[in-house]
Length: 117
Image (cartoon, rainbow, N blue to C red):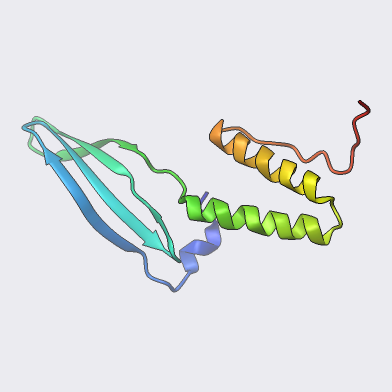
């Protein structure tokens, strides 16, 4: 979820090589990319072509930093609390978002819709 404004951000993007696994025709490089206090650690898989040029075949483990999610959840809690939403409902909505993230889906905000038992 890279926002367009982040391209104009004056803070530097830091990149470090954490690990390199090299075989005759394949390689795997684990890097850390850090900016604004958040970090991701993707694995970059490379394949050596017949001409000897290394090409990226796949990028895995490029997940959002959990710290970012924690801060987003805290902001959501504060906003809902300020709107007067009951604490149990606030917790339920935040947990629903966490569950949706772990299932790689989304949750629609039902707002103040009440369900009759």
